[in-house]
Structures are given as C-alpha cells and as structure tokens.
Image (tube, rainbow, N blue to C red; front, side, top):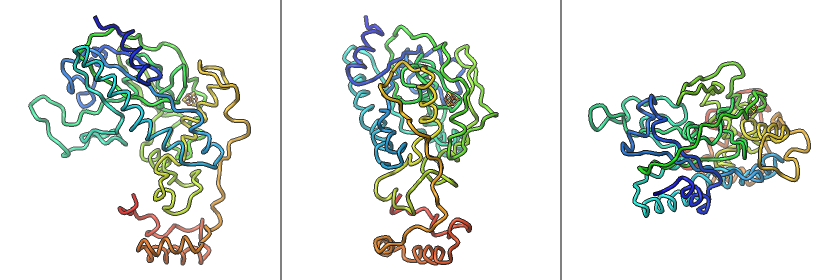
Length: 350
Ligand code: SF4
C-alpha cells in the first residue's frame, strides 16, 4: 500500500523542499468555481509541494544593483521550470504505482476567474454539463498549502511556513491515492507586525481591513489586498515605486515582472521573522545589515543619451520619443503627468 511517507520521500528526492497532504474532504463547502473535486471527482488526496525561493535571489534587489535574479530564479524559473520538473517526475511515479494524478502548476490559469482580481469572468466560458462550474476551475494554491498543513497565510496574504517564512512557491497534485493526511498547522508565525503593510511600495495591503474565511473547521484571516495595486507595484509601475529603470527598457531587455522585489510581503516579512527567530532554517549572517533604501530620486529627468534616442527611433516609436523629449525639456518631470504615449501598452514589447 502506498504510504504518505513514501510519497514525501520521493517528492523530496525529485526536488521539493516541503510536502504536505490534505484529504480532498477538506474542500467540503468550497465555492464551486474553486473546488478541485470538479477537476478530478475521484481524487482522494491533494499533495502540495513547496519550493524555496533562495534568500540570495532577493539580494540584488535588496541592494538595488541586480534586478534579473529575483524575477527569474526566484519567480518564473521556479514556477515554470524547476517545480514542473519535480511535478512531472512525481506524477509519473504515482502513475507507476497505479494512481491517476493531476499535476497542477501555478500558472495563474483559469479562464473563468480573473487570476489577478479573483473575480468571476461572466461570459468567458460555459459549463459543459448542468451543475458543473465554468471552465476553468481555479484552485487556490495558498489555501491548498494551508489545508495540507504546510503553514499559514500571513496578514500579507503570502503563505508562511515555519521553515522558510514567506520564501516559497507551490505546485499541487490531485490523486486518487488515499494517503494519510497532515494535520492543519496550528502554530502562529505571523504576529501582525505590519511590516508587510509598511514596506509595500504599491500600498496594496490594508492594515485594518481583512478577508475572513472559515475553512476545514478553522477561521483564517488576512489583509484586504488591492490586487491591481499589487500587480502594478510588483512591476515597478506605481507612484514612488522602487524601480530604478526608465521607460520600457527593463521590460524589453528581460527584467520582466517583479521589479519591486516583494519589498513588504516577502523581504520585510522575512527580515522580521528571522530577527524574531521564528524560522527553523537559519543563516550564518543577517539578511539586512543596514536600513533598506526606500526611495529613488525621480525628481530629475532621465538621461537622454544617444542610445536612448536611437532606441526610440529604431523601434518606430519616434512620436512617443518626441513627446517624451518635449516633456522632459519642459522640465516638468516629476510634477506633471507623463504624456499618454509613455504609458501606452506596446504589444511589440510586452
Ligand atoms: S510582515 Fe508581519 S504582519 Fe506581515 S505577514 Fe509577515 S509577520 Fe505577518
């Protein structure tokens, strides 16, 4: 008979850092559109794998000197490369034991539910049979991790584990193997210090308003998050954001998202939890040895070098550049609204 211990050992051999198992019955009462039982009606267990975000992946943004490592090694490569490899291997191994297994990566999927706002998208899809939810059902990964006993959802809405605090990402598997479940985590990691709120450049977290949920017999609560402010902030696009790059350069040359480096919800939280000695994974040295820099002086116009001018010209956006140049020449940078062309979404670049 397949045991939870054997599954966990294999998952770790394949590369997972943490493994938790929930019986599917913990989804009793879940909203239809988020209920994994509609994805796999015969599922008995949900296996959740956690992959640590290396603390060093946050270092470059912490220092303000390297912005590629966190979006790649701490974000996309974990979600899209490393974790799926482990997921594949564990899924195949479970199949070899005779159990059907649905491998699910954190791909923000779910046509019927907007993955940023969590709102239902009316008219985007239709149920294939009466009584079904709309495709796609969107399983909430952090709630799955909670139900699998891996830790708790902090005030920041980021998942906290006793091992890594806020530093991990998840994948999950729905399987018809009936496995011994892990108990729901009953400890307390988040102490409501509000460092996440204070240091969120996007001002996406509320210090007072919250979301409350009753799930699997437990009451849980987290800060009311403004998802659009979070989305804008993470890409370094918010007012006063900690984004040192000008124009569309960073996105075009591969920095992608996450320029803000999770200043509040991951870094400030991690620093706080490490200082309080709350995490079981220890480091020889402190992460933060001097005050975090908070603001960049955006009061002066960016340098319009030959390369910048050429770049705008070559990309056929000379009008946009002219508007930008006129705008900066008029010395109104930082006091007036940027020209519309500056803010326009460019499908060739994005
Ligand atoms: S920063 Fe403080 S309040 Fe926010 S999630 Fe972490 S421990 Fe909780």
